[in-house]
Image (cartoon, rainbow, N blue to C red; front, side):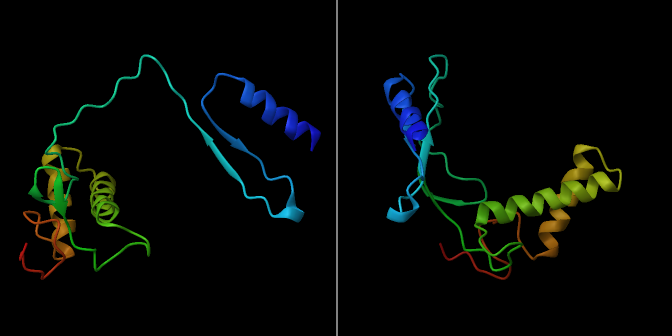
Amino acid sequence: MELLDALRNQRLDSSIPGLFDVFYDILNNVQIQSNFYITHPKYKPLELPDEVVPLFTKQLLPGLALSEEPDYKFTPKEDLGMNRCQIVANALLEAWLQGHDSAEGRMNFILHNFSLLGIDMKRPYLNANSKDIY
């Protein structure tokens, strides 16, 4: 326990930003919480246009988009972005395994995998058989 206190105090005295808590008192049910922030003077903020919306979503207003919750999921806690990216990843793997290395060949596999699930690539924010009422 003295070692952990010394490490914590040394960490607090340093100029590294962040938070350091350690689970060392089981009897009092102390929770673990640890965040470590790295700042670097050469990192510049990412500048994006205000109207950017996530891939596979429908833009409603600048900076505001929607998508339906996927009705077919590869994993239980999957959102739309993960779902659609999994479809793309599966298609690219399939194309690679079959020796289709051209951009056109890969794109054909991507379009085919979306169509197998009934997803319209013109409206990837919708589930199969959904109507665009938005």
